[in-house]
Length: 187
Image (cartoon, rainbow, N blue to C red; front, side, top):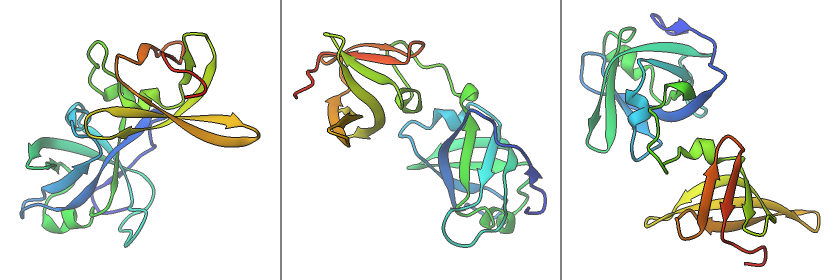
């Protein structure tokens, strides 16, 4: 473990939200590359959990809890400082670290807004109550988001894509873990 970093257990509802790109300045600030175009989840909590980079030099092992003093938007990234990162050298040692936060710390989504992480794994059915499969991932295609739905056909996993827009999506029921769409099985 890096000096000053506190070893911790990863929360059971942890979601990876970004990674540390590099040190920023000389006073222990570091630059974060968020995985979302709207990084509000990074600003919603003062407790971040770090895992070492998957590739490259690993400067620590296990899970570290970081107590954030301040985080703010900066150009196309986020910059942050933490109580346990006193200088540039300590910030450089975090390079590549993966950042996780507890899902329960995310800001509440507005009506008809959803976090992608909440949609993954939901069953998708059409208006005729036919199963189209389960959401494996979401893709941002620029003008819209697309649900990538995985289903089994003739013993093989297949993908179908449904635009995640109101003209095709009738209902998202997170509690029932289901999305109802206006889409046919042969599209």
